[in-house]
Amino acid sequence: MAASSSSTSVLLLFLLFGFAASAKDILLGGKTDAWKVPSSESDSLNKWAQSVRFQVGDHLVWKYEAGKDSVLLVSKDDYVNCNISNPIKKYNDGQTKVRFDHAGPYYFISGEKGHCEKGQKLTVVVMSPRGKSITATSPAPSPAEFEGPAIAPTSSATVLQSGGGVLMAIGVIAMLVF
Ligand SMILES: *[C@@H]1O[C@H](CO)[C@@H](O)[C@H](O)[C@H]1NC(C)=O
View (cartoon, rainbow, N blue to C red):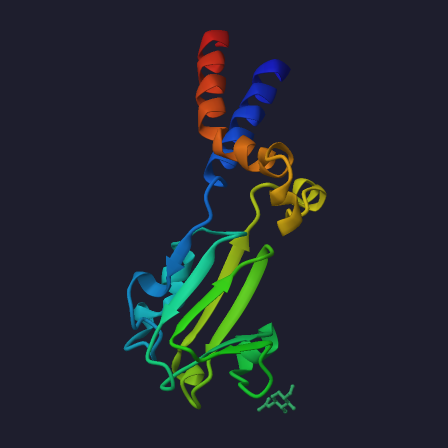
């Protein structure tokens, strides 16, 4: 019925809010020195990336030997062609940390000659569970706002973090209704 399907939608919405509560630092490949030419296709970083849920606000962290390798953020074309001549961003500090500030695909390749061709490349698809409209109407608080009364700038974070509690409440209500 209409009532029950809209309750289900609300439940799903709150599930998504619950998952959105915390931004994570995600270590590439789940271990240090994962940024290298893969030994086999089954070892590919993209397989790992597909098993991970990346969300706006998360950071991806690369650990590798500085000076021996680099991370290039590139366009899709340059990713496909392994073109290292024109990166959007280049990192070679050995402790590369990239924040995903928007949803969508990100393309990374090694800046070492020949490595990308041998499979040292990575596509990350970042999800935005909060949806476009909400994201558009909640600008990031500026440092000045933090100096004012705490209520305004922290309110949206509070709503997000209480998502779990609201979720439980909704779950209880749903059980009572059905
Ligand atoms: C790599 O990209 C540059 C700049 O976009 C371009 O001039 C060059 O021809 C490309 N090289 C290859 C091998 O595609």
